[in-house]
Image 1 (cartoon, rainbow, N blue to C red):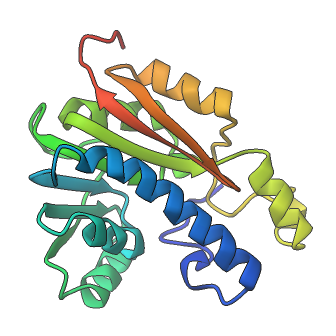
Image 2 (cartoon, one colour; image 1 turned 180 degrees about the horizontal axis):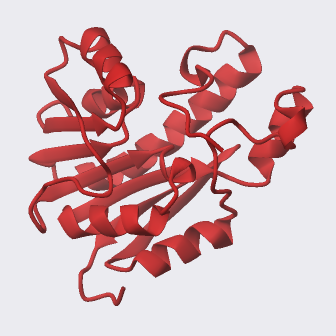
Length: 211
């Protein structure tokens, strides 16, 4: 299946009251994990891998006002949209690859990767790259399967693909998500959250953990 640039469906700005409630739950759960990070003060540097049109990046900025923030995506078209939409937020958006970030080892205090791993042909390689460059925390979120596809089918979306959103080539249950983290190595789970229909983790980088 061909990958899809950016958000196939603009869930962030939906007017549907049910979807708005689900998004509130998502951001409330993210905030609770960000609060753990903020106990140490705002990280000096935050890197978001796979920023899309920058909506989630703007939420990161809202929570970490004093941090230097960089965010990248593979596609020029979505990066350009992010730059235009959030030009006043002091975020450095650019085009880049999650498989080869070009950053030095242990150089990023907080790495963020929201709704990206389900799109990748090699999510283990991607997460290994993030743990390589990370020095303290990593945040990651993915759809919680099969709940995600079931809810899509309940709203009569993507029925021919059994509810699979275009561009999703990995489907993570909680066990599958934990196995991905274990395979990547280099980090430990310090908090796990579920917010229908998403799941998310806050990881602490530990390069002594075997890959």
